Image (cartoon, helix red, strand yellow):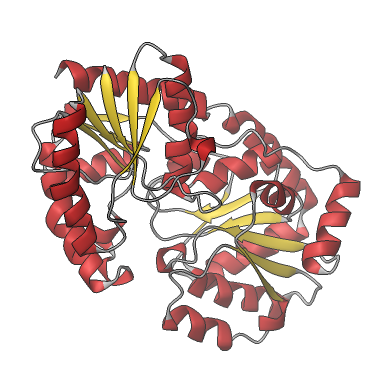
Amino acid sequence: MNIAVNTRLLINNKLEGIGWFTYESLKLITNQHPEHRFYFIFDRDYDPQFIFSDNITPIIQFPQARHPILYFTWFEMALPKLFEKIKPDLFLSPDGFLSLKTPVKSLTVFHDLNFEHYPQDIPYWTRRYYRRYFPKYAAKAVRIATVSEFSKSDIVKQYHVSPDKIDVVYDGANDAYQPIKKVNREKIRARFSGGRPYFVFIGSLHPRKNLVNLFRAFDLFKKSNPSEVKLLIVGARKWWTTEIDSAYNRMVFSDDVIFTGRLNIDELKGVLGSALALTYVSYFEGFGIPIIEAFRAEVPVITSNVTSMPEVAGDAALFVNPFDPESIAEALYKAYQYESLREDLIIRGRRRKSLFSWQQTADRLWESIEKANKA
């Protein structure tokens, strides 16, 4: 097969959820299937590290697709012309977008449909584009891959797609996440939290990550449990809103919140592995990779009881109502106060982590690719 791949989210030092999915799954697939040719299509200069094997031909196709007008230009004008030249058998798009103006068979990966449920969290023109075109992408694709049974059910319900057309491939987690030795934990805490214990949030600072209620919950926790505990917020402020800013500025204990910005993988694994617990209390997720990363790092998990998170975390997390700060604060208290509970969650996480790996993701995605090629 000649497989064209949308790799516009492979950007050095800026990989987030979908970028990591693209990176990890394609690194394995391209190396494990040398008999096939892959065309990696970037919308800007690319880092050579993303050319994983000799059967990859990189192509830079301008313009950079980072705005609804440029989405349309790239997918509906530039890519069809490119496909006429390279004549792919299949187009794989790991970020959900497709080209409606090409006859090439297409496989898309829908990670979640958060914009259908919480459109107010997305900039106006972006959500207009998503809600107009993603139903068309669902109809256009010969197959759809997604990362949880929750997301599969949501796609079926929202876009009236046959469940037989959708493959659940799940996400994985980087093998770099491992337990941290006590002496190293102390060094990491000294660097990032002044030597104090801390809860950690990892992710883009997007409204659906629910920082508003996490800030409120942390204040409640600190008021009822005077302590030196900090809250580390790891991620870029790309989606920072006035509501998040207002919630932060109204905090009594805002001085105990530490913003690290984006960290590289070596820093991330240390920061996560040295935390009291991961606080991942989003109100909407298609999967939630940090949950599995915390399992691998042997760190307790506090997460939400909605969307995909119970499916991913199983019996290995403290579940909260993400819309209730008191529910989140109670979980913070339990994770802080009860060492036996933390140990139990770690043991459960050890068992749970084996259910998810990037190799399993790659294998399932390849099965989906083969089905799409035969469609």
